[in-house]
Image: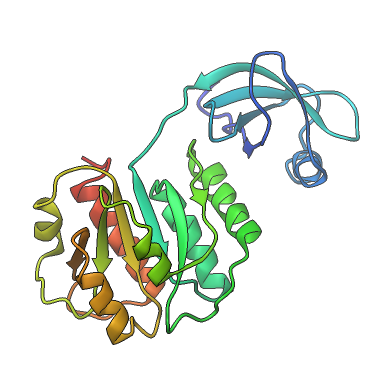
Length: 245
């Protein structure tokens, strides 16, 4: 491909990918390929499914339904940091942003956590997945985060795997330097918890601080909105213990 040619568009699919496989596009994908991108038979797209790497495929002749034939793999599947991102759900636009940025940061799992001050208390998992897919398609990411159904904080703590350190972003923490706090930890499975806009209730904070697997950190001298805190916390984790080093 010459330097002045645009890169092929990326499309996330559910199907298994192998040379010669033919994939039928759903209505939305077909409309996007034919009417938004205005692709024609023989034009190339890149496919990924979060499991088998990235593959080159070509659009087959025919108007409806759109179909693709898989040619060859162009990138093998890669993983990423073993980070669970736990967060109190936010209102729609800000939750969309958090899901997109967490996906870009390479988290392995997205886990909504319901707390005393959480609003709203419902999560549209299909919308979350659509935002994760969109972020992965646009940013060249091969791994999609697993989506978990919302759980109450107390239930999450009761069922926690103590091998996984839980980084608690505690706005009341007296810890000074978050990088120093994280740098003292051994590498391994991680979780990071960002609370709701109203903060954690006193008993919820006490519950967290009693757990031997919880490490509280500060995110600096200023109070951050939850969506800002998400990006800041995940950047710190990737820099100190993730795959940025």
